[in-house]
Each structure stands twice: as C-alpha cells, then as structure tokens.
Amino acid sequence: MITIDWAVRPIITDADHPALHSTCVPVEQWDGNVRDLVHEMIDAARRSPVRAISLAAPQIGECVRVIVYTRNDRWRALINPELRKTFGGEEELPEECLSLPGRSILRKRWLSVTVTGRDERGRPVRETVHGWPARAMQHELEHLDGLLLTDDLPASG
Ligand SMILES: [Zn+2]
Image 1 (cartoon, rainbow, N blue to C red):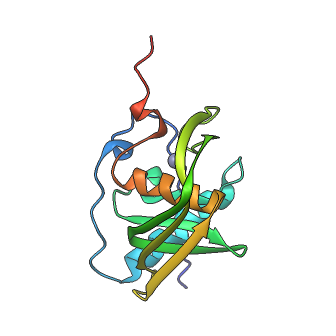
Image 2 (cartoon, protein in one colour):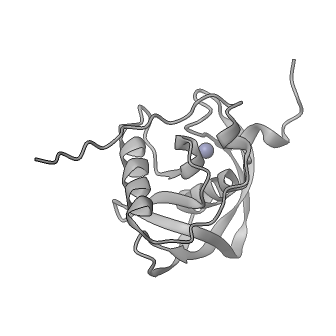
Image 3 (cartoon, protein in one colour):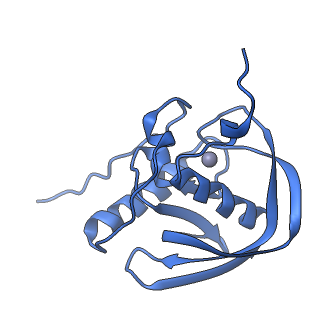
C-alpha cells in the first residue's frame, strides 16, 4: 500500500534566509512537481498561526515563480506572474509579512492591479484585484524578486 505523506513545510521566518533574497526562476514544466509545490504552499499558508491570504514559494524555501492567494474563499495558484496594469491610485498602509513575524511596515501600493500567469495545470490566469488582495499580489510579486518589506528601510542598529 502506498501512502502519500505530504511534507509539512514551515514558513521561513528568518529574514536572513537566502531563499528570501534570491531572484526566483520561472516554472517551465507543468508536472506533478508544480502541483505538489502548490499543495504544500496552500498547506503552509493554512497552518500559519496568523491569517494568511497569500504566500510566495520562496517563503517555504523554493525559489520558483509561484504564488498562492485566496479569491472568493478559495486558494488558487498563480505561476510565472506578471504585473500587467496598475490603477486606482496609491495608498500607504502598514503591511505585514509571514516571514517577518511581529513587524508592521508602512508601504505604498497601488489600489488595483491586473496580473496574468498560469495556474498549476498550465491554464492561463488573468486577475484584476482591488484593495487588500491587490496589496497582497504586489507583496508576493516582490518575494519572487528576492525583496522583503524591510529591504528599502534604512539599516538600523
Ligand atoms: Zn511576505
């Protein structure tokens, strides 16, 4: 009998971890590996002690261009995402990151964005989101380029 034992992967909360500071590579093959990764990311986000609405692959140590996000109470994957359009003006609000627990950092973001990419089966995805989901998209896209909320803050101490 074969039992599938999903690896439970913790979210990296060490801000110095190299996975959080690397430019992630695109997905090129839509096989079981990408679907397993999406599954593990959703699992990690759901198990997070604080409510998560999105997560980027490097946050569980995989430097590939995959994010997961919630839309209409369902978790979805966006692979090789591209920011296509920003609109609605910008707003500066305190923002948090699952990889920077306990920190809240002011960040200016577009109120509305359109992103494109593919889902875990390679089907094209196009999403236009507003408000917090738009903020979350912009946040996760930065993770794929190795950027954290703290990266443009002046060094302290
Ligand atoms: Zn984050």
